[in-house]
Image (tube, rainbow, N blue to C red; front, side):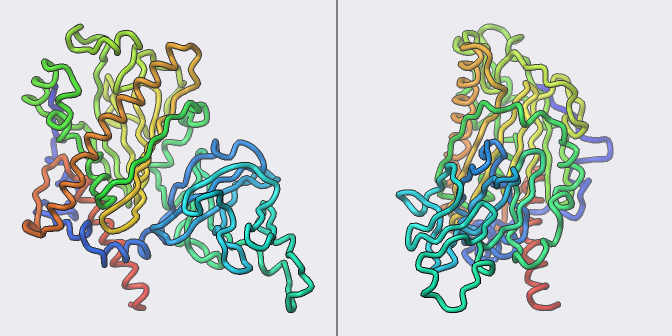
Length: 424
């Protein structure tokens, strides 16, 4: 596997001297106190992606999202005007969770004209207005206009739904566009809306959320950890040559790594798996890439040919990963404690036109899940090891620049929050 030279000016890390080059601490991944600060300083202040508009296909569509990191549950819905709205999932009467099915701590979805509380049948319309109170005349000075659902700041960018937990009586510190910044908004125009063939999986991971993000922010591990998933001749060559991505970028709180690709179908027969030839697909996606038209200016910044992928890491916990073969996937890392989180992955393809195309997408999804499980498999061991505090500082190489940035950015948001709350 070919090595790509670093920029003439020096290493990638040296492009961002504020990150330093020394060993780093992983205290932020093992400290319950830091986790509690993250919940307040990050997950209640940053814009968080909670899905795509395809989850709300018609007026009255809704879904709920458990947001343990923000200590709440939300309802996301499409109102009668077609607008996307979000509310805290709390009835204004006695605080019962408003929308849930058999298991109140699980997400749910559906279509309705109004939300009806299971406890006392208070009703709210899709704009969050309280419309009906059971035995209303028994309440004292009740003004229903004052007791609608508590709204959550909600904006949509390119079909991605984001929420912000700033008080509903105040504006977020930044608009969504300001928060995303040019590196992300330059992705506008990608045909997200045509990628409606979806494959989703999730896992409860016994590790801090940032450790899994770290696993997908560098490819230094790929020739070693994933060696058994590739043909022997290929894995041996890759292990000897190593791998370096040709482009890294940091902008504000967000990060990007872009890599070259391989044309699997041009490799020697012994370098491919028989199932890949049958389905014309594999880890990198279906071989027959769809014509997606002109790509946004923000993709493939290194102008790789062939281009492999671009992984955009949106702070704090959302990733959009574009594949050169004409599909994309998303990752979410939802903290549930200082040493556990829920990992979600969704793969998006164009609607298949033939059974073969469908099988090709399924093979790509299954292959990618296997690789993802390999990455996750190391995490519990990492978590327990660093919790021992036998080693308190860890070395990072030049390719691990994005790891440095994530942990530094986490600390910066906490520091800013503490200064603001202290009135400094």
